[in-house]
Structure formats: structure tokens, C-alpha cells
Amino acid sequence: MSDLPDPLTVAAAQPELRPGDLARNAAAHAAAIRAAGARLVVFPELSLTSYALSAPPVPLDDPALAVITLACAETGSVALAGAPIRDADGTEHIAMIRFDASTTTVVYRKIHPDEDEARRFAAASSPTVMTLDGWRLGLAICRDTMMFEHAADTAEHARASGLGGIDAYVAGSLFTPTGLPKRDKRMPQLATGYGMWVVQSCFAGPGSDYPKTVGASAVWAPDGSVAARADDRPGRIVKAELRF
Image 1 (cartoon, rainbow, N blue to C red):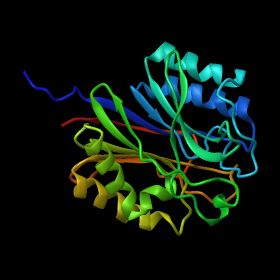
Image 2: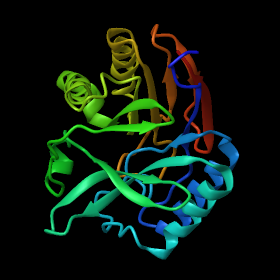
Image 3: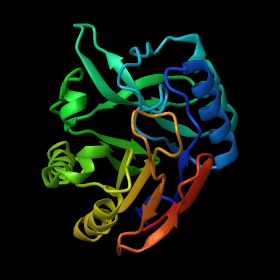
Image 4: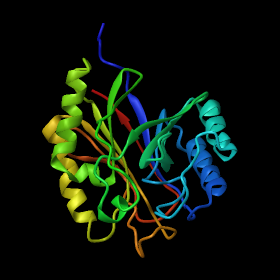
């Protein structure tokens, strides 16, 4: 009998989003979860508010989020969405929020905000590895994935925590036309360098602080090959089965 976990079906969604419209964006998340048919559904950076740096922080008990929890309950999915959050001490972060059938929790805070983001949001210091169905998932948000130390620190955190390593690197992101070629070079290097899957959901369409975003949500296999990739249109969902 193998000790390896069963394959994990993962979807990277890039729904159409509107700045600051939490109720509409939450409904778009719920629709994507139902359409994806995946155990894990990943959304872009700051997806619940759209990538709008002036949007207010999202309270985890906001009633608008209930539709996402319901969608997870109906499908058996776990969703990772992006949002600005405010901690109890007043510090604000760009965060990744985990939704499942019964809980809504902040699972990761961005470690490497860019210069514009850092005017409002604090940099976190702790890498995160989330376990799901026996899979060890290193979490990242956008610029984290482009910083060479982030994946290394996440893998070391997994080892120090007794997990042994990471099986997949999962990120919510946004890329512009100038940033996409660098992303497309970097992600296969991460996959082959660590022998892991890489899953990245990216913002698509209008509705962000950027005049143009490129979508291109994708999944890379441990050999660096592209297992699934979206185009630049909002509403796309790409899916892959992660297996050893």
C-alpha cells in the first residue's frame, strides 16, 4: 500500500471582479467554485475586493461571504481567496483566506508587498504550508513567487515544522503584460527546482488598479511543463489533477 496521497484536483479561477463590490465578487467566487468541480479552487490576489488598494478590509464575518461557504459545502471544495484584512492590533495585510464547508480563516499574509502596496499593507514574516488531503501546499501571493528566497523559506519552514517539504506551491497573483514573461520563466524553474507542482490564479480583465491585466492562470507540473493555462479573458477556469 502506498503512503502517497491520492491525486488532488485543483482549479485556478480568474472571475470577473469589480473594485470594492464585496457582495458581487463573493457571488462570482461561489459561481466559480460550483463550476470548477475541484477539491481546491484558487483565486487571484485581493480577489474579494478586486485588486483595488483603496478597498476597505474584509471582515471574516461579513454576511456577503456566506455564499462562498455554502458553495464549498455543496461541492466539497476548499477555496483560497484574496482580501485586504485588518488584524486585531490594526495592522493591515494582503491576505489569503481559506473557505471550506464550515469555516473561514486567514491562512497566509503576504511577505513581499511591492512599493505601492507597502504604503498601506505591512509585510508578514512567516511562511505558511497548508495541508489538504495529505498534500503539503506552500502558499504565496503574487510578488512572493518572484522573490527567490520565498520558495526556499517556505520549503525550510515545512521541514522545520516536521512536514518534510512541500508538494505544491499555490499562489494568487496579478500580472501585467511586462511582468508575464518573467512569470513564465520563473514558475517552471520553481517547479523543477523543488520537484513540485505550481498553481497560480491570476487576475483577468478590467476592475483593478492596473490599466491592463493578462490573466494566464496556470498549473505547472514538477517537470516544468504546463498542465493547464488560461487566456486573458475573465471568467476562465483551468483545472489539473495533481499526482505523484
